[in-house]
Length: 285
Image 1 (cartoon, one colour):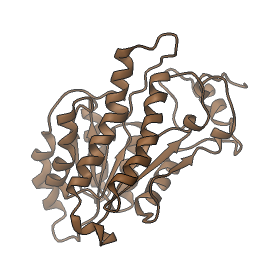
Image 2 (image 1 turned 135 degrees about the vertical axis):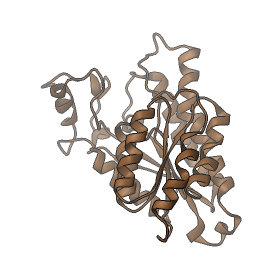
Image 3 (image 1 turned 90 degrees about the vertical axis):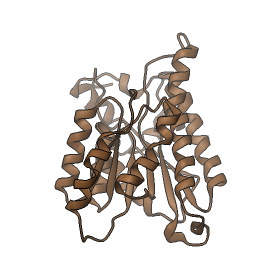
């Protein structure tokens, strides 16, 4: 998912009404989800809200979709705010946690869900595409982890109740390599290693964990028939569904003894070696 340029704005306009609508209610925990306007990010944002969290809904280009997610969350009785940032611009990424804090309160969980996912291989990979993937798939999660650490009080070192968590959304293909989507794969592999390094560096104030889905939703060009066939190519006869990822993310958000590791939620897709990315499977293959 590529983000577009912009500054934090809609949140400040909606902050007052959001707070007023929940006056007198005990404060909820706050989660910031990147790429929360569409697809898996939308499911995660709504899933956290259904479980009692207030949600910072980051978006890049999908302003209308983000507004709809915010509206749906508010209908659930939770607070939400749209947060606009270009994840390729460090200054805008660094402003997301402070903006979320100003609008909703300090986030105790950041879900790095947004990704750039352009098709390339070793035969056409180049600097430009690789660097674009690196900025969004690796640079933004690193900066968000750093700024969450800075926002987490020092008292969290001794008080587990004050600690925070970063959930990096990865991919099952890191455990079942194929040559497709090379720049995406390499940057996600770097983020997997960064998950371990960050868990070591930011402990005990911040836990850092990975969540690796399998094939979850159809791509833009994929037919429903092709998606259904590819989705079945797992030991469990189905890969991950949005609700599976929501349940896993909620578990990781509260798993106080879990850090520096990745939870695969893919129906065992990573156990089935394939020469191409699973999205290229044809019906009946």
